[in-house]
Image (cartoon, rainbow, N blue to C red; front, side, top):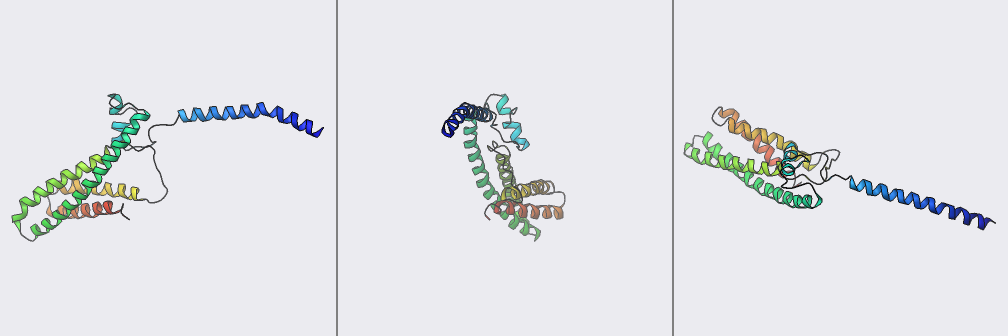
Length: 199
């Protein structure tokens, strides 16, 4: 009798469990359809180009699809690698500028043209590197970690050295004292932003 009752209860629960499993699978299918191809947060420059209503989508150059997001990740990787290489070249230019600038402050004015030439090249490489980072396609997901991370530190330092780069260029002819202070701030924050990924 107990065996018979157990068998009947078992047979009655099979359709119910099958229905629950079917509902579970349907819910999973629905949730995968709703997965976004873009991260929840992007830099405004990335949103401008790569957002759902960004320039790349509106012009139909890169419609939002899984295949195109895979291509974008390859483009992103190349752009960020170029950003890194140009970053090292820019840092070398800043070191050269520091050496030349120190000589100018000591009265060696023969180096003024060289200082300006390397300064212009460093400024071009700086903004090229910044553009590669700011306009690269966004990552697949937004990674928000609690506390400090090397990426957060890099971004905070970028805000400082970006402002200092603009100030350094604006003050080049206006005020030598502030130009020098801005260039030291630029070099310190930029070097720290480069080194933060190494440690």
